[in-house]
Image (cartoon, rainbow, N blue to C red; front, top):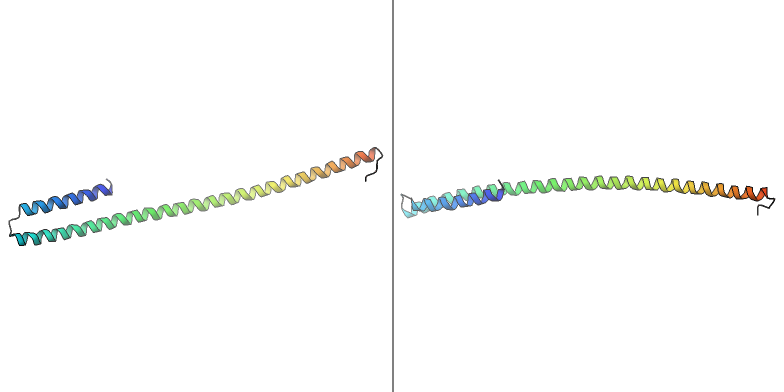
Length: 121
């Protein structure tokens, strides 16, 4: 059952109890008012306690959610760092490969010119 329904039920019970207490009171009005006032204070204290427990529960859930969000953020940042490192490594490998291929192409070009008797200039 949700906390809102419990709180509504408690309030309805307080109101019904107070009304029945006044209607069926065997004592004088002043005594009955004191009893009703005392019971109202007891119920109000009970409601405060329940409400504070409800707020504590909500606060705990919010804290848990924030902790979970922080954990997810941390893992996501680690993932991005890992991807960034891999991307940099891949860039370096592609650059090295490109440099090697350029060097091989220059050598082939130079060898071709040499075999045709042309100068290397």
